[in-house]
Amino acid sequence: MSPEHSVCKVLYLDHTAKLSGGEMALSRLLVALDPTRAVPIVILGEDGPLVNTLRSEGIETHVFPLSSHIRTIRKDTMGIEGWLQRTKHIYPFWQYAFRIVRFARENHIDIIYTNSLKSDLYGGLAGRLARLPVIWHVRDRIETSYLPTAAVRLFRLLARHLPTCVVANSQSTLETLQLPPTALTEVISSGMTQEYIQRCQEPPIQHSVPQIGIVGRIASWKGQDIFLRAAAQVLKSGQKAHFRVVGAPLFGEDQQLETLKSLASELEIEDQVTFCGFQTDIPTQLRNLDILVHASTLPEPFGQVIVEGMVAGIPVIATDGGGAREIVTHEQTGLLIPLADVEALTASLLRLLSDPELAARLAAAGKEHALQNYTIEISARKSEALYERVLKRTKP
Image 1 (tube, rainbow, N blue to C red):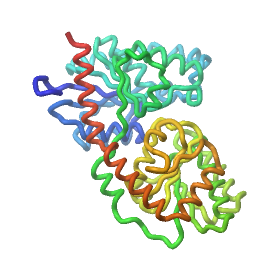
Image 2: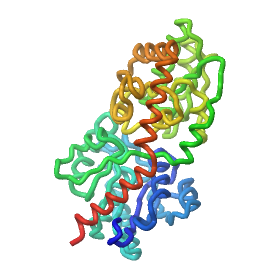
Image 3: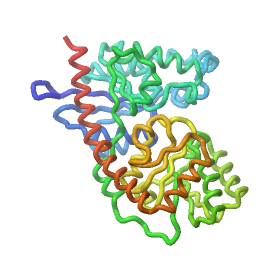
């Protein structure tokens, strides 16, 4: 806030306390906020690792248990039939919203800020009931490749009426909401802390054979299968390399991991592939790589791991869709390839492996770009300025 304004109290809502990407991004943002401009208070819908993470940083955090029926709704069950089956949960949903309203009034909250699709719904309702401005932070693409058609239509409709402002992690994500030009919006990408940046920039781990990796949770649309098929073609060409799959299934997709291991066996590359599983120390995993691959077969909402790879000084190959194309400029800060294109990924890998000068040039330019555009300080300052804009628009 500007000096003539008092500090703004922002109530942040999230339905989960798991350390998923959006929740970790929120944690980094709250720690970086200037306490003379914005005071964060958090309400989570469950207990979990995020609670201790926030409290250890001095962030006031409360747990208001959300009905498990609401908290565990899967996105693929949010069609018309799914909504009809859950009409019996409407009353608990309203009760939860009213509890937030009471808390907001008792604690003199200025803005309600929602950090997930589920909290968008009850947080938006609470904001309307409390007559407080609401900011939705949308981190998922609101389109039929991600959500059922009924849910897409509902969220696009509600986005025009519930929030005062919509924040998106990329311009691509924002466009999926199809908001009118008059809507108050902002693109604020997830930023990295200086500590995280320093860890990424520690000396790389040296290998006699090039290490090529894909980092992210195991899911059918994340493209680990494309990565493995390209790996097989690279090895078939006679190029020596080792391939690392970093990540684990998170949302009931355990079978996908077994499918990938079977694929590696079928391709006869199991000895050249390491399935690293879930890793908490991503900077070390990145410093263990010579090339980072992003292979999502659907447009990515943002692409945090791409930025992290750039900061670590690794040349990046990413799929040309969604937020990734906003991060990577083809042939300048990395290489872009079509979605789900094994041949293109193979050709790009062989190109970087055979041209160390090109790999080094892309890595250096990517690192500079990431450091200039994706730090948590940039995200925090943009957020604080946005809070001021929202209050100016909503207060007489």
